[in-house]
Image (spheres, rainbow, N blue to C red):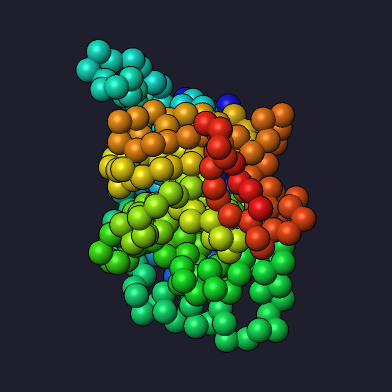
Length: 328
């Protein structure tokens, strides 16, 4: 622990390792916009205070506090607050003014420089999404294509439908609003640290937007990777960006639908499923599906599909009982 909290632990949770030998300031590669630097900032230019978590890239000018650091690597505001509480960078206090049991969070540390939030202007465009999408299918010999098709269980049809692309470093997954407007891009790399990044200016949302889906039952899953795998096997799945990313305001987007909630089999996933189900009360017909009640290791939809003898015939459905299930 340093200063008012565990700054090193907080940044490690974001996938940003602060050198153990560093003193008051640690130098790391820029995590705000690495593509803006030569060779992804191979010669680190970003300084992070190990005392209070403030950071600044001396090359591209991006800077902010610990909260801003979490946002730029793709954490939702709720997930960011949870991490800050966990590592002692904020304290959580109950408030009589809190609505529906929400918690107000008070920042417990003051940085010596004024934190500057990163720009909310989206730094990618439809042209970029189209270019990356074309790149994904330009060379069928790329080894990572086999990883997506065989190991991740993604189909080319699903990847084309969702405009999945490749930006030269990571798989890109666009986020669109109900009118088809681009609101962000997620950058995915299986086994990467972190596994998922968000392009600067990205606003999180359900993927794909429920308004673009035909009427009928849908299944909410945890993360775009599981969503693409599920849709590749006949399931009308929609991704919640992460176990802390769900926003209560998204419930109205699912109004009147039959919704199966199939989050990962671990404490965070099960807690998220309960929050989502509670927000859908009176809005949609929601049922929680626990794929493996006996497991607590993050077992997910993709893992479940791998276990099936004929996964490509799988589809999301609901049993005659009150409990929904994934069935072949």
